[in-house]
Length: 413
Image (cartoon, rainbow, N blue to C red; front, side, top):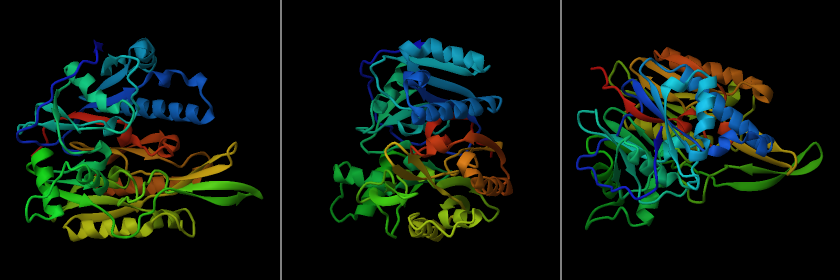
């Protein structure tokens, strides 16, 4: 176990930045962030307990089905290290994990993938963490410093705003959600040179600051994208409210706040194109016998799929159901996407760890689970199904959100 204080860690800028792939190479190390409140289940209400149980079940499932070389780095608070170690021992997982602790006053979340990016040298063997100039959520922006201090990697800064879930890295390209770039433009971190268009400035900044060798594709919807709103509804005669487009801010250009919620990387097809899965709410509605979800922003997902196809990607659509969670005390319904795109993927060998949703009141989503599984299997993958992910999805997450890939083996030629 490593112990870390919180003194500042020097950051450098990568001379020839290159990001770790989202898909290529067998996964060797996954990072989980385990705040102390995960072990304090009894203190919370039913919704929070369901979330904790869901998180623990997904982590356990990933670790138990890990491939032979895969190991895990887990950050927790100093006061919770013994509890975490005991949980790992009870589940037969202790020998797979390295524990790192941090001061109890560092308030970090479970959303490990967003906190930093992982870069690698040109030989692909030495990793480094990349952090943006600021990070908006809790103490998550400090987590990379803790890991660097413990020897996990060196630390490098980038003058661009990003969140890990809004970037997907292929073999010779990367996809990045437009909203993060808009924030960098507003802050002046991306500035246009004389005679340079905004798009050209964005491409130049991504090449210089994130990945010099890959072509960047910005994911943005030209069709309308709605921001979070609340409206009145009635449930069995009672006055309720329902929250739509949960988490979307005014001016967003993405139907979901992170592109890994609705896009998955699959790999090269026989004709040389790179295949992407793009979620389709219309397809999911048909599969579960629904007339359609009018608030599913189908046009935005369709437009993004069309744009990616026009850029030379082989695009396959997969079902993306819309679900809701009810708070009977507040008489409030919150809608969310039950995303199977938010999966952990490796191509060497081809394995995907995929969330599932056909449980409880949503048993009919077993049809979309089966369809998503079939999509991956048709593309040559072994599918390792994860437990009920609804409590994670209703808080804007999935398997990819809580599991940060820190190292991969060199891809096979």
